[in-house]
Image 1 (spheres, helix red, strand yellow):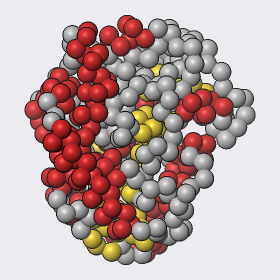
Image 2 (tube, one colour; image 1 turned 60 degrees about the horizontal axis):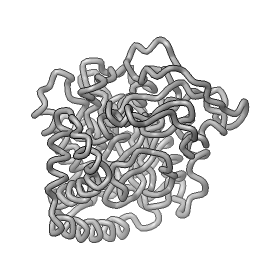
Image 3 (spheres, helix red, strand yellow; image 1 turned 90 degrees about the horizontal axis):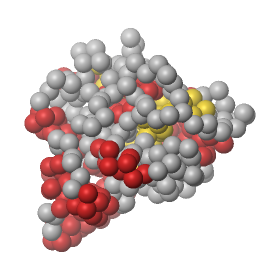
Image 4 (cartoon, helix red, strand yellow; image 1 turned 45 degrees about the horizontal axis):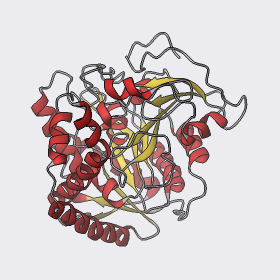
Amino acid sequence: MLVDDPFRCFVPYPQAPVKHAPTGPLAGLTLAVKDLYDVKGYPTGAGSPLVLAQSGIKTKTAPVVKALLEAGARFVGKTHTDELAFSLNGKNAHFGSPINPAAPDRITGGSSSGSAAAVAGRLADIGLGSDTGGSVRAPASYCGLFGIRPSHGRISLKRAWPLADSFDTAGWFARDGEVFARVGEVLLGKDKLALPVTPRLLLADDLFAQAVPEAETILRNVVQRIVPQLGEPETVKAVRDLDALYWAFRWLQGREAWAADGALIERLAMPLGPGVTERFAFSRAITDADHAKGEAVRKAFRTRLAKLLGQDGVLILPTVPDIAPLVSAPEDQLDDFRNRALRLLCLGGLSGFPQVTVPVARREGAPLGLSLLGPKGSDKSLIAFATTFERAARVRIA
C-alpha cells in the first residue's frame, strides 16, 4: 500500500501481502481496488463504519480482483467509496472525501471516488470500481479518465458488496486507451456481438440537450472533429420520455438497494450521511405499483434501444450534464446536479448495455467526458472503438 496518499484515495488499512503474477498482460501496472471488493488479508468496509466493524479480515479475494492479479497487476491498496455505494458525489460523511487531482476544487464523483482519484493522481494505473447508477462513468468524466460500465452480468460480482442486483456492474478506470483496453482483454472474454471497426454512429440530439449550454457546445464540437476520420453521425432522438426513465431507474434501484441493505440499516440503527439518509428513506417507501411501473418502462426502453442500435450502432451522448460540481457546493445543489446527471446515466443501467466514457474535453479547466453506448455484449469492440474515437477527437488536455 502507498504511504504517500496526497489525494486521500486509499483506506488506511494495515498493509497485508497480496500476491500477483510476475508476468502477464498487466505486468508492470499497479492496481487500486474499491473497498466493495474482498481482497484476502483486508476487511471490506463499503464506506460504512458499521460494515467495516463487522467485516473481519477476508480469507478469499473477489474473482474480478483475482483475475487482474493473475494477469500481473500489482495491488497498491483499497480505495474509498461513498457510503454503501449509494451516491454519485464522492463525499463520505464518515471517512472523508478524495481530492480530484484533475480539478482539486471540484468533487471526484462517486461512488468509485477513491479509485478514480488514484488513477487520475498517478498513484495507480488501473482503478477497479463498480457502476450501478453511474459510479464509474461520472467520476471518469469528472477526473479526465477512460471508464466503463460493462454489459450487465459480463463480469463476476462475487465477493463484492451489493447495492442493486439488476444494475450492479464491475467497471474500471485508466488514464490512456492502451491500458484501458488491456484490462478489457483480461476481464471481458470474447464479445457475443462484435461491432464493425467503424460502427454506425448515432448522435443522441435529445440527450445532448440535457447538458448545460456551454458543455453541449463543447461536446458537439468534439463530435465534429471526428467526422473526417469516422464519418458524420446520424442525428437521432434516443428516448421517448426521459423523466419516465429517470423515475423507473430510481424506483427499481431503490427497491433493490433497500432489499440489499435495509435490514442491516434497521438492525444496527445505522447512522447514514447526508444524501444517503434521504435516498434510503425514499427506497424504503417505494410501492409495489411503483416497482411494477418501473419494470414496464425498463422493458419498453430496452427493446427500443436495442432496435435503434441493432448490431452495428453506437450512440454518442454526454456522460453527465457538465464538469464536476464544486466541493463547496451545498448539499441541495449537489443533489440537484445528481438528479440531472441520473437522467443521462440511467440509460446504461436500464438497458444493461455497455457504455464507455472517453476523456475528450475541458471546461473552466476541468475535465468533461463524452460517452459511447453500444449493443449488449459488444464491450471489447466498443472499447476498441472508444480508443479510436478518442484519438480522432483528441484535444490538448493540459
